[in-house]
Length: 370
Image 1 (cartoon, helix red, strand yellow):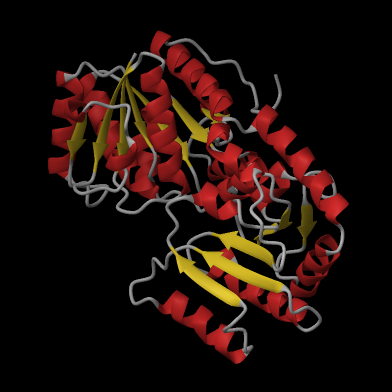
Image 2 (image 1 turned 90 degrees about the vertical axis):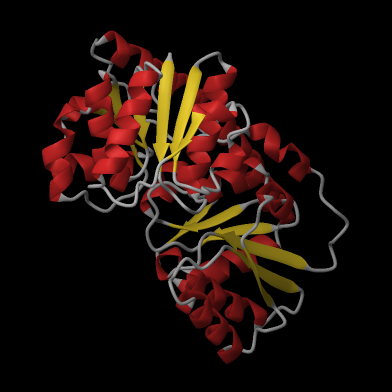
């Protein structure tokens, strides 16, 4: 198949990682994969399986950019694209125009929970399928009544398990425990709750360090400033490290004894799955995405959102119980292999593409149920 992936992102996040992994895997399977990206997009460096001539740069500054729509349409027609696949809401209208003018089928992926706008209701009626990265996202889409129910398909994000193989090799670092969290710095990600839980742990233990990995995407850096201020107030300067953006996530995970996801809302939880794949025991707040990934007490522990005391208690309990950490980690790796592998995600996306291209109704499966 000839597939055009569209993404105007100017930063790398979970959705962009998803696109890179999907595009490279489809190309490796023999599909002719193209990508339309924003100028100087960091996504381009990750598309190693695509020849340079298959990648086009388009401004895509907003959803109503007629010039970008025409450029995309011309590219799609010239390359005889069969499937146009967009990953960001602001790209959906542009992708719809390009697909319509090129005679291609339109597929969308929805990575977040917040609602689409009225403009999407008007423009996206001809969408062939919309992929939700979790059941929580699928339910949010259904509640908006923009797409007919048969067009909403759940395909969980998948990860390349081979990238995390080396994380099984524990370095010689047992003098101190390391507990980490990964995610862009923002109130919704709950880093301040993580720090407060860390403060409670530090009251009784002096052998634990806390690592916060992620960049601040706010305009004036106010999110990082608030986190730094809280660290100073709680006198944790020597115990909490802000690493900024991390290119090599498996390398960081290989150094951790526990991974904590303190998010106040999470549509899926890619960082949780990556930690599980790396064999790092996980404590997560019971966000929408985390509840789909973890059965509490089996593949990790879930605590109530915002319950700092419960988070600290779970950290304490797991730090003193190496056997329980090993049990949770082993169970978690098995779940990732069976439900959240890259191969599984690509298989299901490829199946969706084929059935859409043939113009037949895709069977109404739910990811995780065969």
